[in-house]
Image (cartoon, rainbow, N blue to C red):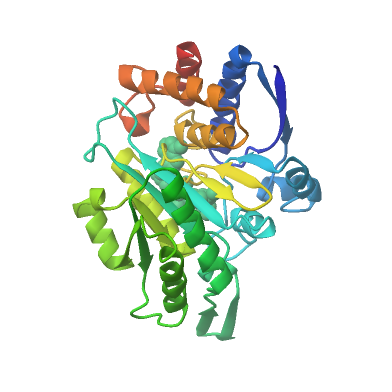
Length: 338
Ligand code: NAI
């Protein structure tokens, strides 16, 4: 039966519009054989939105996400050391998208130093130093507030363990720095431990974050699910993306009780923006997570098979993974492989 989905689309800025239009083209092409169509409700956010509407996140965008409950989002630039607050963090908080799910898996045919990686990061997405609470005590002392709560820590731990049970994963590592931040990270760990006790079939372990960085580079295979706070999760995600070929590949989902926003791990990559160089695979794989979320598994499977074929053949790959193809040529190759 033909099925139309209303999806809020935020192309973002930098490489965002390029990877978004490549992804949309692939989804629409794949939908033709499965009878799935998409009604994209497209909005700017960030500096572009401000220039047009006077708002960094237009009210119409909030309303659209509220209504559709599913969004596909390109990266949005956040000014450094001043300017407006991160659009990404604001949306995650506004819709209480507390679980940032980031699967890290090799693509077939793409050679890396770490073959057969298959690990998952569950990053708490609404608290920690990303609370945005900062004050200048005086001109020479700045203070940032790290917020960790029982509610936030327990629900992200529950997400990680539920996922482990559902997908036959064996081990959850809670990553922390509770030796130094005894209260905040101590609370996070107590919550993780308490949730772990309800899942006797899943092994639970704890690693300190600095050691984790070394352990990951030495032997990432010891990790199955990484469960961690907001800041550590952000940093570890970029590190882990390098195992499978870099930021151009790794997808993500921001999941809450009522809605979900799907976006790649990477940012707006200003160094390659507007040059037809960006790899759209990370956003495409985020869109595949979205298709699973909206129960369009067949369309997702067809795209996954085509994507695997393009990587296995290795003839039309983008520069970040050793090829010479542009964003558009890559997406045309995936469409041709469908
Ligand atoms: P970045 O992820 O944009 O880029 C880091 C490096 O990876 C660059 O060399 C870039 O060219 C490369 N890269 C990233 N995505 C790629 C892709 N799809 N294909 C090929 N190469 C790719 O990180 P950076 O430079 O630290 O941040 C740039 C801006 O993005 C900042 O304003 C930051 O705040 C924002 N950002 C936004 C995010 C979001 O919207 N969710 C997430 C992360 C950063």
